[in-house]
Amino acid sequence: MTLEGKTAFITGTNRGLGRAFVEVFAANRANVIAHARKETPEFREFLNDIAQKNSVTITPVFFDMTDSAAMRSVVRSIVMAKTPVNILINSAGVAHGGLFQMTSMEKIHEVFVVNLFAHMELTQQLLRYMMRFPHGSIVNIASISGLDLKKGNCAYGVSKAALIAFTKTLAAEVAQSGLRVNAVCPGLADTDMANLMEAKAGAEMIARSAMNRLGQPREIAEVVAFLASDAASFVNGQIISVDGGRA
Ligand SMILES: NC(=O)c1ccc[n+]([C@@H]2O[C@H](COP(=O)([O-])OP(=O)(O)OC[C@H]3O[C@@H](n4cnc5c(N)ncnc54)[C@H](OP(=O)(O)O)[C@@H]3O)[C@@H](O)[C@H]2O)c1
Image 1 (tube, rainbow, N blue to C red):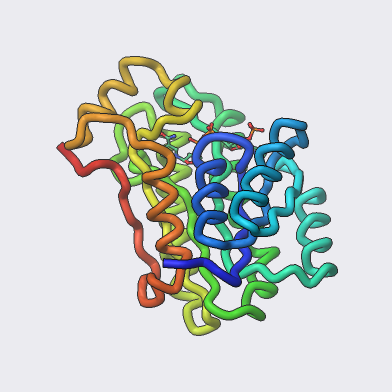
Image 2 (image 1 turned 90 degrees about the vertical axis):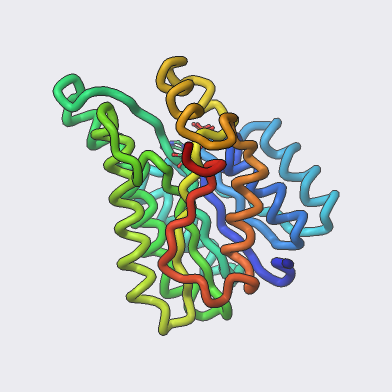
């Protein structure tokens, strides 16, 4: 599998899964447009190291996913610079757990804005532009929480279920324009998101995995890179769980 000659726009790359996506995509020879909310010296250094190590170009871009104007301005600069975008990985996300009656509508909106609407917005802004380039692929990072809806998931799980629904409907709409759209549903993976989870909820999620362990970010990233690559050229509208199997 190679991503040589392709450029991937990946959101939420300063830590967690997004960071592993940058590492694995660059190792597979993709150029990367690496999104983060804020610029830091540590992030710059990380991107420079990966770019040098793999002889690829990595271009950082910065915006808060909730800031439409800033997002639009970054997309405009990419289009003006004629930087190709073959691949879009919608990964930035926020977690939340809580019973419906204990969760404010403000919190539900907040989670949906990042986990669903911002991805839809970025996808909509980039879609026509991506159609100019061959072999386009979009991978949305959903979650097994969007498939396996349990109590306490009215904000996060429902936002991911909506992202899965969006993935399927978009896949049906744009296939004939040369774009494939799939989603990956990670199980609990070893990032800040999982590590900040309430211990009991985390242990329950791990117990539901047949492998009975956390996933490593790289294990998620390899599947995302496969879906983004031409090796998956007939895979479209699919929701792929990467969770060690269900116990
Ligand atoms: N880890 C898991 O167990 C797991 C399981 C299933 C699905 N997922 C999904 O995988 C994706 C990545 O999760 P992760 O584990 O890497 O989480 P993480 O370690 O908490 O990282 C989240 C990333 O999203 C970014 N982000 C959040 N809100 C943002 C905003 N308003 N504007 C810009 N960036 C924002 C964060 O940026 P800052 O550093 O600036 O906050 C960070 O880069 C998420 O969509 C998550 O739902 C994760």
